Length: 619
Image 1 (cartoon, rainbow, N blue to C red):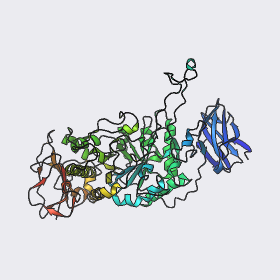
Image 2: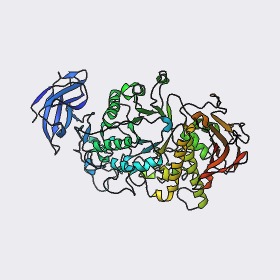
Image 3: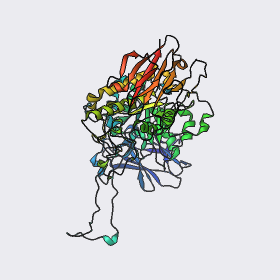
Image 4: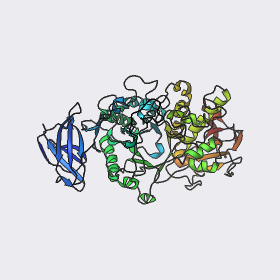
Protein backbone atom coordinates (compact mmCIF):
# COMPACT_ATOMS: atom_id res chain seq x y z
CA UNK A 1 0.00 0.00 0.00
CA UNK A 2 1.44 3.36 -1.06
CA UNK A 3 1.36 5.40 2.13
CA UNK A 4 3.97 8.15 2.10
CA UNK A 5 6.00 10.38 -0.19
CA UNK A 6 8.99 12.62 0.41
CA UNK A 7 11.63 14.43 -1.57
CA UNK A 8 14.05 12.12 -3.37
CA UNK A 9 17.83 12.35 -3.66
CA UNK A 10 18.44 13.43 -7.32
CA UNK A 11 21.53 11.20 -7.48
CA UNK A 12 20.40 8.77 -10.16
CA UNK A 13 17.70 8.89 -12.83
CA UNK A 14 15.18 6.09 -13.00
CA UNK A 15 14.15 3.92 -10.04
CA UNK A 16 16.34 3.08 -7.07
CA UNK A 17 15.81 1.72 -3.56
CA UNK A 18 17.17 3.49 -0.50
CA UNK A 19 16.44 2.24 3.01
CA UNK A 20 13.15 0.70 1.99
CA UNK A 21 12.03 3.76 0.04
CA UNK A 22 11.55 3.60 -3.71
CA UNK A 23 12.91 6.75 -5.37
CA UNK A 24 11.70 7.93 -8.77
CA UNK A 25 13.84 10.55 -10.53
CA UNK A 26 13.00 11.97 -13.94
CA UNK A 27 13.25 15.05 -16.16
CA UNK A 28 10.60 17.74 -15.64
CA UNK A 29 10.45 21.48 -15.14
CA UNK A 30 9.36 22.99 -11.82
CA UNK A 31 6.26 24.41 -13.50
CA UNK A 32 5.14 21.06 -14.95
CA UNK A 33 2.25 19.12 -13.47
CA UNK A 34 3.74 15.71 -12.75
CA UNK A 35 2.44 12.43 -11.37
CA UNK A 36 3.43 8.78 -11.20
CA UNK A 37 0.86 6.31 -12.48
CA UNK A 38 0.88 2.85 -10.93
CA UNK A 39 -0.68 -0.18 -12.62
CA UNK A 40 -1.70 -3.68 -11.60
CA UNK A 41 -0.71 -6.88 -13.38
CA UNK A 42 -3.69 -6.40 -15.70
CA UNK A 43 -2.20 -3.00 -16.73
CA UNK A 44 -5.15 -1.12 -15.25
CA UNK A 45 -4.27 2.01 -13.31
CA UNK A 46 -4.53 1.50 -9.54
CA UNK A 47 -2.95 4.69 -8.20
CA UNK A 48 -1.97 8.18 -9.30
CA UNK A 49 0.51 10.01 -7.08
CA UNK A 50 1.37 13.63 -7.76
CA UNK A 51 4.97 14.82 -7.51
CA UNK A 52 5.08 18.32 -5.98
CA UNK A 53 6.85 21.10 -7.85
CA UNK A 54 9.09 21.77 -4.86
CA UNK A 55 10.67 18.33 -5.33
CA UNK A 56 12.79 19.81 -8.09
CA UNK A 57 16.39 20.84 -8.72
CA UNK A 58 17.03 22.37 -12.11
CA UNK A 59 14.94 20.29 -14.50
CA UNK A 60 15.01 17.17 -12.37
CA UNK A 61 12.14 15.86 -10.22
CA UNK A 62 12.77 13.27 -7.53
CA UNK A 63 10.32 11.70 -5.10
CA UNK A 64 10.68 8.90 -2.57
CA UNK A 65 7.68 6.65 -1.91
CA UNK A 66 7.38 4.13 0.89
CA UNK A 67 4.99 1.25 1.28
CA UNK A 68 5.57 -0.28 -2.15
CA UNK A 69 7.59 -3.24 -3.39
CA UNK A 70 9.96 -2.10 -6.13
CA UNK A 71 10.07 -5.59 -7.67
CA UNK A 72 6.31 -5.47 -8.35
CA UNK A 73 5.85 -1.92 -9.62
CA UNK A 74 4.53 -1.20 -13.09
CA UNK A 75 4.57 2.51 -13.74
CA UNK A 76 4.57 5.44 -16.12
CA UNK A 77 4.89 9.17 -15.66
CA UNK A 78 2.23 11.75 -16.42
CA UNK A 79 3.60 15.17 -17.35
CA UNK A 80 1.12 17.94 -18.17
CA UNK A 81 -1.51 15.31 -18.94
CA UNK A 82 0.68 13.25 -21.27
CA UNK A 83 1.54 9.69 -20.23
CA UNK A 84 5.22 8.89 -20.78
CA UNK A 85 7.38 5.82 -20.16
CA UNK A 86 10.48 6.44 -18.05
CA UNK A 87 13.44 7.06 -20.38
CA UNK A 88 15.67 5.50 -17.71
CA UNK A 89 13.50 2.44 -17.05
CA UNK A 90 15.73 -0.62 -16.62
CA UNK A 91 12.90 -2.92 -17.58
CA UNK A 92 10.22 -2.39 -20.22
CA UNK A 93 6.90 -4.20 -19.78
CA UNK A 94 4.77 -4.78 -22.88
CA UNK A 95 7.25 -6.00 -25.51
CA UNK A 96 7.97 -9.47 -24.15
CA UNK A 97 6.88 -11.14 -27.41
CA UNK A 98 8.66 -10.34 -30.67
CA UNK A 99 6.47 -8.75 -33.35
CA UNK A 100 3.32 -9.35 -31.30
CA UNK A 101 0.18 -8.56 -33.32
CA UNK A 102 -1.52 -7.54 -30.08
CA UNK A 103 0.57 -4.38 -30.06
CA UNK A 104 -1.37 -3.11 -33.07
CA UNK A 105 -4.31 -2.22 -30.81
CA UNK A 106 -4.94 1.49 -30.36
CA UNK A 107 -4.78 1.26 -26.57
CA UNK A 108 -1.45 -0.55 -26.62
CA UNK A 109 1.11 0.90 -24.21
CA UNK A 110 4.42 0.03 -22.63
CA UNK A 111 5.38 0.53 -19.00
CA UNK A 112 8.44 0.86 -16.85
CA UNK A 113 9.42 -1.74 -14.27
CA UNK A 114 12.14 -2.28 -11.69
CA UNK A 115 15.03 -4.59 -12.55
CA UNK A 116 16.45 -6.63 -9.68
CA UNK A 117 20.22 -6.43 -9.08
CA UNK A 118 20.77 -9.84 -7.48
CA UNK A 119 23.04 -11.33 -10.15
CA UNK A 120 26.27 -13.02 -9.02
CA UNK A 121 29.05 -11.95 -11.37
CA UNK A 122 31.45 -14.24 -9.50
CA UNK A 123 35.01 -13.20 -10.42
CA UNK A 124 34.08 -11.73 -13.80
CA UNK A 125 36.65 -9.42 -15.39
CA UNK A 126 36.75 -7.71 -18.78
CA UNK A 127 39.36 -9.38 -21.04
CA UNK A 128 40.73 -6.08 -22.45
CA UNK A 129 42.05 -7.78 -25.59
CA UNK A 130 44.70 -5.63 -27.33
CA UNK A 131 43.92 -4.46 -30.84
CA UNK A 132 46.57 -6.63 -32.50
CA UNK A 133 44.90 -9.79 -31.11
CA UNK A 134 41.29 -8.88 -31.89
CA UNK A 135 39.11 -10.67 -34.45
CA UNK A 136 35.56 -9.29 -34.49
CA UNK A 137 32.27 -10.96 -35.46
CA UNK A 138 29.05 -8.98 -35.95
CA UNK A 139 25.67 -10.61 -35.35
CA UNK A 140 21.97 -10.01 -34.81
CA UNK A 141 20.73 -11.98 -31.80
CA UNK A 142 17.53 -13.23 -33.45
CA UNK A 143 18.83 -13.63 -36.99
CA UNK A 144 21.90 -15.51 -35.77
CA UNK A 145 19.84 -18.39 -34.39
CA UNK A 146 16.37 -18.47 -35.96
CA UNK A 147 16.91 -20.80 -38.90
CA UNK A 148 17.84 -24.46 -39.19
CA UNK A 149 20.53 -25.83 -36.90
CA UNK A 150 19.19 -24.43 -33.63
CA UNK A 151 16.01 -25.85 -32.17
CA UNK A 152 13.69 -25.33 -29.24
CA UNK A 153 12.71 -22.24 -27.31
CA UNK A 154 16.26 -20.88 -27.30
CA UNK A 155 16.02 -19.96 -31.00
CA UNK A 156 16.49 -16.24 -31.49
CA UNK A 157 17.70 -15.60 -27.94
CA UNK A 158 20.77 -14.73 -25.90
CA UNK A 159 20.86 -18.35 -24.74
CA UNK A 160 21.27 -19.53 -28.34
CA UNK A 161 24.25 -17.22 -28.79
CA UNK A 162 25.73 -18.58 -25.58
CA UNK A 163 25.38 -22.12 -26.92
CA UNK A 164 27.42 -21.09 -29.98
CA UNK A 165 30.35 -19.71 -27.98
CA UNK A 166 32.43 -22.93 -28.41
CA UNK A 167 31.98 -22.68 -32.19
CA UNK A 168 32.92 -19.00 -32.29
CA UNK A 169 35.93 -19.55 -30.06
CA UNK A 170 37.16 -22.47 -32.18
CA UNK A 171 36.88 -20.20 -35.22
CA UNK A 172 39.24 -17.74 -33.52
CA UNK A 173 36.76 -14.96 -32.75
CA UNK A 174 37.71 -12.75 -29.79
CA UNK A 175 35.09 -10.00 -29.91
CA UNK A 176 31.35 -10.17 -30.61
CA UNK A 177 29.55 -7.07 -31.85
CA UNK A 178 25.81 -7.16 -31.21
CA UNK A 179 23.37 -5.21 -33.33
CA UNK A 180 20.87 -3.31 -31.10
CA UNK A 181 19.74 -5.52 -28.22
CA UNK A 182 18.31 -2.83 -25.98
CA UNK A 183 14.54 -2.30 -26.09
CA UNK A 184 13.14 -0.85 -29.32
CA UNK A 185 9.82 -1.13 -31.12
CA UNK A 186 10.18 -3.58 -34.01
CA UNK A 187 6.58 -3.19 -35.17
CA UNK A 188 5.82 -0.42 -37.60
CA UNK A 189 2.61 1.11 -36.29
CA UNK A 190 0.89 3.34 -38.83
CA UNK A 191 -0.45 6.64 -37.60
CA UNK A 192 -4.21 6.95 -37.87
CA UNK A 193 -5.02 9.02 -40.95
CA UNK A 194 -8.16 11.08 -41.26
CA UNK A 195 -9.64 13.05 -44.13
CA UNK A 196 -10.31 16.79 -43.67
CA UNK A 197 -13.87 17.63 -42.62
CA UNK A 198 -14.93 18.73 -46.09
CA UNK A 199 -14.28 15.20 -47.36
CA UNK A 200 -16.39 13.46 -44.74
CA UNK A 201 -19.09 11.53 -46.56
CA UNK A 202 -20.62 8.09 -46.67
CA UNK A 203 -18.84 5.84 -49.14
CA UNK A 204 -20.92 4.39 -51.96
CA UNK A 205 -20.22 1.64 -54.43
CA UNK A 206 -18.61 3.05 -57.55
CA UNK A 207 -16.96 6.05 -55.84
CA UNK A 208 -13.70 7.02 -57.54
CA UNK A 209 -12.25 8.20 -54.24
CA UNK A 210 -11.82 5.69 -51.42
CA UNK A 211 -12.95 6.72 -47.97
CA UNK A 212 -10.08 4.79 -46.35
CA UNK A 213 -6.50 5.45 -47.29
CA UNK A 214 -4.74 2.37 -48.70
CA UNK A 215 -2.67 0.34 -46.27
CA UNK A 216 0.76 -0.88 -47.26
CA UNK A 217 2.18 -4.17 -46.16
CA UNK A 218 3.45 -3.91 -42.59
CA UNK A 219 7.18 -4.29 -42.09
CA UNK A 220 9.23 -5.44 -39.16
CA UNK A 221 11.98 -3.14 -37.93
CA UNK A 222 14.31 -6.12 -37.76
CA UNK A 223 17.64 -4.36 -37.22
CA UNK A 224 16.59 -1.86 -34.55
CA UNK A 225 18.26 1.37 -35.72
CA UNK A 226 15.52 3.56 -34.27
CA UNK A 227 15.18 5.49 -30.98
CA UNK A 228 14.92 2.99 -28.14
CA UNK A 229 14.71 2.47 -24.41
CA UNK A 230 18.42 2.67 -23.77
CA UNK A 231 18.55 1.28 -20.23
CA UNK A 232 16.67 -1.98 -20.70
CA UNK A 233 17.51 -5.32 -22.30
CA UNK A 234 15.22 -6.37 -25.15
CA UNK A 235 12.82 -8.83 -23.50
CA UNK A 236 11.93 -10.66 -26.74
CA UNK A 237 15.59 -11.68 -27.15
CA UNK A 238 15.39 -13.81 -24.02
CA UNK A 239 14.27 -17.42 -23.57
CA UNK A 240 13.18 -16.64 -19.99
CA UNK A 241 11.09 -13.88 -18.37
CA UNK A 242 14.28 -12.32 -16.98
CA UNK A 243 16.03 -10.91 -20.05
CA UNK A 244 18.54 -8.94 -17.99
CA UNK A 245 19.77 -12.08 -16.25
CA UNK A 246 20.09 -13.99 -19.52
CA UNK A 247 22.08 -11.14 -21.08
CA UNK A 248 24.37 -11.02 -18.05
CA UNK A 249 24.87 -14.79 -18.21
CA UNK A 250 25.92 -14.47 -21.84
CA UNK A 251 28.43 -11.73 -21.06
CA UNK A 252 29.82 -13.66 -18.08
CA UNK A 253 30.22 -16.73 -20.31
CA UNK A 254 31.97 -14.70 -23.01
CA UNK A 255 34.40 -13.28 -20.48
CA UNK A 256 35.05 -16.74 -19.03
CA UNK A 257 36.12 -17.77 -22.55
CA UNK A 258 38.34 -14.72 -22.98
CA UNK A 259 35.91 -13.04 -25.39
CA UNK A 260 34.48 -9.51 -25.49
CA UNK A 261 31.00 -8.03 -25.91
CA UNK A 262 30.53 -4.87 -27.99
CA UNK A 263 27.08 -3.22 -28.18
CA UNK A 264 25.89 -1.20 -31.16
CA UNK A 265 24.11 1.91 -29.89
CA UNK A 266 22.08 4.09 -32.25
CA UNK A 267 21.00 7.57 -31.09
CA UNK A 268 18.97 9.92 -33.28
CA UNK A 269 19.80 13.60 -33.68
CA UNK A 270 17.30 14.73 -31.02
CA UNK A 271 18.79 12.61 -28.25
CA UNK A 272 19.89 14.39 -25.08
CA UNK A 273 23.66 13.95 -24.92
CA UNK A 274 23.63 13.61 -21.14
CA UNK A 275 21.30 10.63 -21.52
CA UNK A 276 23.74 9.10 -24.01
CA UNK A 277 26.59 9.33 -21.52
CA UNK A 278 24.41 7.97 -18.72
CA UNK A 279 23.35 5.01 -20.90
CA UNK A 280 26.92 4.05 -21.80
CA UNK A 281 28.06 4.23 -18.18
CA UNK A 282 25.03 2.15 -17.17
CA UNK A 283 25.82 -0.76 -19.51
CA UNK A 284 29.44 -0.83 -18.36
CA UNK A 285 28.56 -0.60 -14.68
CA UNK A 286 25.55 -2.92 -14.59
CA UNK A 287 26.30 -5.36 -17.44
CA UNK A 288 30.11 -5.38 -17.73
CA UNK A 289 30.02 -4.76 -21.50
CA UNK A 290 33.42 -4.22 -23.10
CA UNK A 291 32.63 -1.55 -25.66
CA UNK A 292 30.23 0.38 -27.86
CA UNK A 293 29.88 1.00 -31.57
CA UNK A 294 28.31 4.47 -31.58
CA UNK A 295 25.94 5.42 -34.40
CA UNK A 296 23.99 8.64 -34.99
CA UNK A 297 24.76 12.32 -35.48
CA UNK A 298 24.09 13.39 -31.90
CA UNK A 299 26.72 11.28 -30.16
CA UNK A 300 29.15 13.42 -28.09
CA UNK A 301 32.14 11.38 -29.19
CA UNK A 302 34.80 13.55 -27.56
CA UNK A 303 32.96 13.59 -24.23
CA UNK A 304 32.58 9.80 -24.40
CA UNK A 305 36.28 9.35 -25.17
CA UNK A 306 37.21 11.62 -22.24
CA UNK A 307 34.84 10.01 -19.74
CA UNK A 308 36.91 8.51 -16.91
CA UNK A 309 34.46 5.68 -16.22
CA UNK A 310 34.72 4.66 -19.89
CA UNK A 311 38.50 4.98 -20.22
CA UNK A 312 38.91 1.18 -20.40
CA UNK A 313 35.81 0.65 -22.52
CA UNK A 314 36.36 0.22 -26.27
CA UNK A 315 34.74 3.01 -28.29
CA UNK A 316 34.07 2.51 -32.02
CA UNK A 317 32.88 5.33 -34.30
CA UNK A 318 33.67 7.00 -37.63
CA UNK A 319 36.45 9.18 -36.24
CA UNK A 320 37.89 11.13 -33.32
CA UNK A 321 39.17 14.63 -32.62
CA UNK A 322 42.99 14.53 -33.00
CA UNK A 323 43.37 16.41 -29.73
CA UNK A 324 42.33 13.21 -27.93
CA UNK A 325 45.72 11.74 -28.79
CA UNK A 326 47.78 14.55 -27.32
CA UNK A 327 47.72 12.75 -23.97
CA UNK A 328 49.06 9.21 -23.91
CA UNK A 329 46.49 6.57 -23.02
CA UNK A 330 47.61 3.61 -20.95
CA UNK A 331 44.84 1.55 -22.55
CA UNK A 332 44.13 2.05 -26.25
CA UNK A 333 40.34 2.00 -26.41
CA UNK A 334 39.51 4.13 -29.47
CA UNK A 335 38.74 2.51 -32.85
CA UNK A 336 37.80 4.05 -36.19
CA UNK A 337 34.91 2.07 -37.71
CA UNK A 338 33.98 3.14 -41.24
CA UNK A 339 33.64 1.95 -44.86
CA UNK A 340 37.10 3.28 -45.74
CA UNK A 341 38.58 -0.22 -46.06
CA UNK A 342 35.64 -1.82 -47.83
CA UNK A 343 35.67 0.04 -51.16
CA UNK A 344 39.37 -0.14 -52.20
CA UNK A 345 39.40 -3.88 -51.43
CA UNK A 346 36.17 -4.60 -53.33
CA UNK A 347 37.35 -2.59 -56.33
CA UNK A 348 40.57 -4.60 -56.54
CA UNK A 349 38.86 -7.96 -56.06
CA UNK A 350 36.17 -7.33 -58.67
CA UNK A 351 38.26 -5.39 -61.23
CA UNK A 352 36.40 -2.12 -60.87
CA UNK A 353 39.08 0.52 -61.21
CA UNK A 354 40.90 -0.37 -58.02
CA UNK A 355 44.42 0.95 -57.49
CA UNK A 356 47.09 -1.23 -55.94
CA UNK A 357 48.49 1.72 -53.98
CA UNK A 358 45.15 2.40 -52.30
CA UNK A 359 44.75 -1.29 -51.53
CA UNK A 360 48.19 -1.58 -49.93
CA UNK A 361 47.60 1.56 -47.86
CA UNK A 362 44.46 -0.04 -46.44
CA UNK A 363 46.27 -3.31 -45.73
CA UNK A 364 48.88 -1.53 -43.60
CA UNK A 365 46.61 1.12 -42.13
CA UNK A 366 47.51 1.59 -38.47
CA UNK A 367 47.83 4.31 -35.84
CA UNK A 368 49.92 4.26 -32.69
CA UNK A 369 47.11 5.63 -30.50
CA UNK A 370 43.95 4.15 -32.06
CA UNK A 371 42.77 1.11 -33.96
CA UNK A 372 41.01 0.61 -37.28
CA UNK A 373 38.24 -1.89 -37.99
CA UNK A 374 38.49 -3.59 -41.40
CA UNK A 375 35.56 -5.30 -43.09
CA UNK A 376 34.61 -6.23 -46.65
CA UNK A 377 30.96 -7.04 -45.95
CA UNK A 378 28.53 -5.77 -43.30
CA UNK A 379 24.84 -5.89 -42.51
CA UNK A 380 24.39 -2.66 -44.47
CA UNK A 381 25.18 -4.19 -47.87
CA UNK A 382 25.82 -7.53 -49.54
CA UNK A 383 26.98 -10.55 -47.59
CA UNK A 384 30.41 -11.77 -48.66
CA UNK A 385 28.88 -14.59 -50.72
CA UNK A 386 26.48 -12.23 -52.49
CA UNK A 387 29.33 -9.82 -53.24
CA UNK A 388 30.59 -12.36 -55.78
CA UNK A 389 27.19 -13.68 -56.91
CA UNK A 390 25.14 -10.59 -57.76
CA UNK A 391 25.89 -7.67 -60.04
CA UNK A 392 22.84 -5.74 -58.86
CA UNK A 393 20.86 -5.48 -55.63
CA UNK A 394 17.61 -7.45 -55.40
CA UNK A 395 15.60 -5.68 -52.70
CA UNK A 396 12.11 -6.10 -54.15
CA UNK A 397 10.95 -8.00 -51.08
CA UNK A 398 11.44 -4.81 -49.05
CA UNK A 399 8.42 -3.26 -50.74
CA UNK A 400 10.24 -0.16 -52.01
CA UNK A 401 10.47 -1.11 -55.68
CA UNK A 402 14.18 -1.90 -55.30
CA UNK A 403 14.97 1.78 -54.66
CA UNK A 404 16.41 1.24 -51.18
CA UNK A 405 19.91 0.07 -50.33
CA UNK A 406 23.20 0.98 -51.94
CA UNK A 407 23.23 1.04 -55.72
CA UNK A 408 27.02 1.11 -56.00
CA UNK A 409 28.35 -2.08 -54.43
CA UNK A 410 31.45 -2.91 -56.50
CA UNK A 411 30.11 -6.45 -56.76
CA UNK A 412 30.27 -8.98 -59.60
CA UNK A 413 28.28 -12.07 -60.55
CA UNK A 414 31.06 -13.60 -62.70
CA UNK A 415 28.72 -14.58 -65.51
CA UNK A 416 25.38 -15.44 -63.91
CA UNK A 417 23.14 -13.41 -61.64
CA UNK A 418 22.60 -15.35 -58.44
CA UNK A 419 22.50 -19.13 -58.20
CA UNK A 420 24.11 -21.18 -60.92
CA UNK A 421 25.34 -24.73 -61.52
CA UNK A 422 28.03 -23.67 -64.01
CA UNK A 423 31.21 -25.13 -62.63
CA UNK A 424 33.66 -22.44 -63.77
CA UNK A 425 31.51 -19.69 -62.24
CA UNK A 426 31.21 -21.57 -58.95
CA UNK A 427 34.96 -22.12 -58.87
CA UNK A 428 35.86 -18.46 -59.38
CA UNK A 429 33.29 -17.41 -56.78
CA UNK A 430 34.78 -19.86 -54.28
CA UNK A 431 38.28 -18.56 -55.03
CA UNK A 432 37.11 -14.99 -54.50
CA UNK A 433 35.61 -15.95 -51.14
CA UNK A 434 39.00 -17.36 -50.11
CA UNK A 435 40.74 -14.26 -51.47
CA UNK A 436 38.47 -11.95 -49.48
CA UNK A 437 38.95 -13.85 -46.21
CA UNK A 438 42.71 -13.97 -46.77
CA UNK A 439 42.91 -10.25 -47.49
CA UNK A 440 40.85 -9.43 -44.43
CA UNK A 441 43.02 -11.52 -42.11
CA UNK A 442 46.24 -10.15 -43.62
CA UNK A 443 45.27 -6.52 -43.01
CA UNK A 444 47.05 -4.77 -40.16
CA UNK A 445 43.80 -3.39 -38.70
CA UNK A 446 41.21 -5.32 -36.70
CA UNK A 447 39.34 -7.79 -38.99
CA UNK A 448 35.55 -7.91 -38.72
CA UNK A 449 33.43 -10.77 -40.08
CA UNK A 450 29.71 -10.47 -40.67
CA UNK A 451 28.05 -13.49 -39.09
CA UNK A 452 27.59 -16.28 -41.59
CA UNK A 453 30.19 -15.01 -44.05
CA UNK A 454 32.48 -17.80 -42.87
CA UNK A 455 30.08 -20.38 -44.32
CA UNK A 456 28.74 -18.59 -47.38
CA UNK A 457 25.50 -17.18 -45.98
CA UNK A 458 23.38 -15.51 -48.65
CA UNK A 459 20.53 -12.99 -48.61
CA UNK A 460 19.56 -13.76 -52.23
CA UNK A 461 21.03 -10.48 -53.40
CA UNK A 462 19.19 -8.29 -50.87
CA UNK A 463 21.70 -5.67 -49.71
CA UNK A 464 19.38 -3.93 -47.24
CA UNK A 465 17.60 -6.64 -45.25
CA UNK A 466 16.53 -4.25 -42.49
CA UNK A 467 12.93 -5.50 -42.59
CA UNK A 468 13.52 -9.12 -43.58
CA UNK A 469 12.68 -11.04 -40.43
CA UNK A 470 12.57 -14.28 -42.39
CA UNK A 471 14.89 -16.63 -44.22
CA UNK A 472 16.31 -13.75 -46.24
CA UNK A 473 17.63 -12.05 -43.12
CA UNK A 474 18.33 -15.10 -40.97
CA UNK A 475 21.55 -17.09 -41.03
CA UNK A 476 21.09 -20.38 -42.80
CA UNK A 477 23.22 -22.79 -40.79
CA UNK A 478 22.53 -25.55 -43.33
CA UNK A 479 24.99 -23.74 -45.59
CA UNK A 480 27.69 -25.16 -43.33
CA UNK A 481 27.09 -28.53 -44.99
CA UNK A 482 28.18 -27.16 -48.37
CA UNK A 483 30.55 -24.42 -47.28
CA UNK A 484 32.17 -25.97 -44.23
CA UNK A 485 35.44 -25.77 -46.15
CA UNK A 486 35.15 -21.97 -46.08
CA UNK A 487 34.67 -22.01 -42.32
CA UNK A 488 37.78 -24.18 -42.02
CA UNK A 489 39.73 -21.82 -44.28
CA UNK A 490 38.62 -18.86 -42.17
CA UNK A 491 39.77 -20.65 -39.03
CA UNK A 492 43.16 -21.37 -40.61
CA UNK A 493 43.60 -17.76 -41.74
CA UNK A 494 42.77 -16.44 -38.27
CA UNK A 495 45.22 -18.94 -36.79
CA UNK A 496 47.91 -17.88 -39.27
CA UNK A 497 47.38 -14.22 -38.35
CA UNK A 498 47.77 -15.08 -34.67
CA UNK A 499 50.92 -17.17 -35.16
CA UNK A 500 52.66 -14.43 -37.17
CA UNK A 501 52.03 -11.24 -35.17
CA UNK A 502 54.14 -8.97 -37.37
CA UNK A 503 51.15 -8.89 -39.76
CA UNK A 504 48.98 -7.12 -37.17
CA UNK A 505 51.67 -4.96 -35.54
CA UNK A 506 50.35 -2.35 -33.09
CA UNK A 507 52.59 0.38 -34.51
CA UNK A 508 52.44 1.75 -38.07
CA UNK A 509 54.80 0.06 -40.54
CA UNK A 510 57.74 2.25 -41.59
CA UNK A 511 58.86 0.44 -44.73
CA UNK A 512 62.49 0.65 -43.63
CA UNK A 513 64.93 -1.04 -41.27
CA UNK A 514 64.46 1.52 -38.49
CA UNK A 515 65.39 -0.98 -35.70
CA UNK A 516 68.53 -2.38 -37.40
CA UNK A 517 67.06 -5.86 -37.91
CA UNK A 518 68.75 -6.33 -41.28
CA UNK A 519 65.52 -5.96 -43.28
CA UNK A 520 62.69 -3.41 -43.47
CA UNK A 521 59.66 -4.20 -41.34
CA UNK A 522 57.58 -4.14 -44.55
CA UNK A 523 58.70 -4.19 -48.18
CA UNK A 524 57.09 -4.45 -51.63
CA UNK A 525 58.33 -6.55 -54.56
CA UNK A 526 57.43 -6.92 -58.21
CA UNK A 527 58.94 -8.99 -60.99
CA UNK A 528 62.27 -8.10 -59.43
CA UNK A 529 63.02 -8.17 -55.71
CA UNK A 530 63.09 -4.78 -54.00
CA UNK A 531 62.06 -3.06 -57.21
CA UNK A 532 58.44 -2.33 -58.04
CA UNK A 533 56.27 0.56 -59.01
CA UNK A 534 52.79 0.99 -57.58
CA UNK A 535 51.39 2.50 -60.77
CA UNK A 536 47.65 2.57 -61.36
CA UNK A 537 47.79 -0.24 -63.92
CA UNK A 538 49.70 -2.65 -61.64
CA UNK A 539 47.60 -5.63 -60.55
CA UNK A 540 50.12 -7.82 -58.73
CA UNK A 541 52.56 -7.25 -55.89
CA UNK A 542 54.55 -9.13 -53.27
CA UNK A 543 54.54 -7.96 -49.65
CA UNK A 544 57.24 -9.15 -47.23
CA UNK A 545 57.07 -8.85 -43.44
CA UNK A 546 60.21 -9.19 -41.33
CA UNK A 547 59.49 -11.35 -38.29
CA UNK A 548 62.37 -9.84 -36.31
CA UNK A 549 60.09 -6.89 -35.61
CA UNK A 550 57.92 -9.32 -33.63
CA UNK A 551 60.91 -11.14 -32.11
CA UNK A 552 60.53 -14.05 -34.53
CA UNK A 553 63.20 -15.61 -36.74
CA UNK A 554 61.12 -15.79 -39.89
CA UNK A 555 59.71 -13.87 -42.84
CA UNK A 556 56.19 -13.83 -44.25
CA UNK A 557 55.68 -13.13 -47.95
CA UNK A 558 52.22 -12.51 -49.39
CA UNK A 559 51.74 -12.50 -53.14
CA UNK A 560 48.65 -10.76 -54.50
CA UNK A 561 47.57 -11.26 -58.11
CA UNK A 562 44.39 -9.47 -59.15
CA UNK A 563 44.98 -10.14 -62.87
CA UNK A 564 42.69 -12.60 -64.63
CA UNK A 565 45.84 -14.21 -65.99
CA UNK A 566 48.95 -15.61 -64.25
CA UNK A 567 51.75 -13.53 -62.77
CA UNK A 568 55.25 -14.03 -61.40
CA UNK A 569 56.66 -12.19 -58.41
CA UNK A 570 60.25 -12.11 -57.18
CA UNK A 571 61.21 -13.68 -53.86
CA UNK A 572 63.86 -11.72 -51.94
CA UNK A 573 67.00 -13.65 -51.02
CA UNK A 574 66.87 -14.89 -47.43
CA UNK A 575 69.70 -15.04 -44.87
CA UNK A 576 71.83 -18.20 -44.86
CA UNK A 577 70.04 -21.54 -44.38
CA UNK A 578 66.57 -19.97 -44.58
CA UNK A 579 64.27 -21.22 -47.34
CA UNK A 580 60.98 -20.08 -48.80
CA UNK A 581 58.05 -22.50 -48.44
CA UNK A 582 54.64 -22.04 -50.01
CA UNK A 583 52.05 -22.57 -47.25
CA UNK A 584 48.83 -21.23 -48.80
CA UNK A 585 47.48 -20.73 -52.31
CA UNK A 586 43.84 -19.70 -52.86
CA UNK A 587 44.01 -21.13 -56.40
CA UNK A 588 44.42 -24.68 -55.07
CA UNK A 589 40.75 -25.10 -54.31
CA UNK A 590 39.19 -25.95 -51.00
CA UNK A 591 42.46 -27.34 -49.61
CA UNK A 592 44.29 -24.03 -49.93
CA UNK A 593 46.65 -24.56 -46.97
CA UNK A 594 49.63 -26.86 -47.40
CA UNK A 595 50.42 -28.36 -43.97
CA UNK A 596 54.02 -29.24 -44.81
CA UNK A 597 54.63 -26.40 -47.22
CA UNK A 598 56.34 -26.63 -50.60
CA UNK A 599 59.93 -25.47 -50.86
CA UNK A 600 60.44 -22.81 -53.53
CA UNK A 601 63.81 -23.18 -55.23
CA UNK A 602 63.27 -20.53 -57.88
CA UNK A 603 63.82 -16.82 -57.36
CA UNK A 604 60.22 -16.18 -58.34
CA UNK A 605 56.86 -17.52 -57.27
CA UNK A 606 54.15 -18.21 -59.86
CA UNK A 607 50.56 -17.17 -59.17
CA UNK A 608 47.49 -18.16 -61.10
CA UNK A 609 44.96 -15.54 -62.09
CA UNK A 610 42.99 -13.96 -59.25
CA UNK A 611 44.97 -15.72 -56.55
CA UNK A 612 46.77 -15.00 -53.30
CA UNK A 613 49.72 -16.98 -51.97
CA UNK A 614 51.53 -17.00 -48.64
CA UNK A 615 55.12 -18.13 -48.18
CA UNK A 616 57.16 -18.55 -45.02
CA UNK A 617 60.88 -17.92 -44.94
CA UNK A 618 62.59 -19.81 -42.13
CA UNK A 619 65.16 -22.48 -41.36
